Length: 197
Image 1: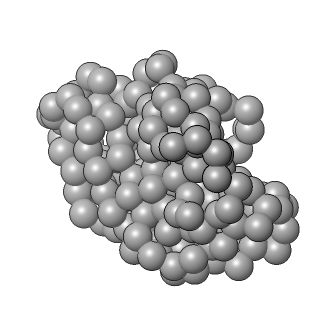
Image 2: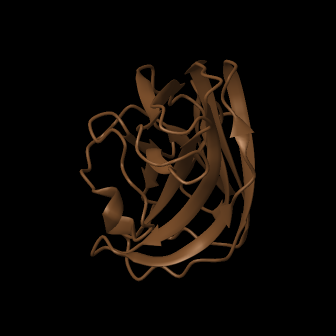
């Protein structure tokens, strides 16, 4: 079955964004990272999508929200489309989601490959769910602790002005990965393969 990953509030891991080799700046290290897991508990706290006042419009992109997922052992890292939603709790007309990167991270916490990326912009001026679809290559994990990290790159629409929106990590990320362990049926429901409806 296709593996879906629930966004959560968990920040059990501590990574600098430079770890992933994207060259992006982490705008808010205390509130920017989140785990996503199969069968996880939907998040409720606000995370900041923030771009500092340095740089100019179109050249000040910063990574403010990202998700780390460790697929269970036996998962097939198949090629295909990832659907990555974010829910805007408090919008701002001065900020946009500029790019999304899906990265394969090794057990040594280094970027092994960029599985896919998209640079289609998404306005964050209004609340609600904004969704991106990213077509990705297959991955070849070297071990059960290899991870997928989704890095989201935000940009200020006004030169030299700091802007912020808030994101609630309560959405489900759909992947082309195939697993026979557990799947998230909804935000509140976990279905074991072969058990229940």
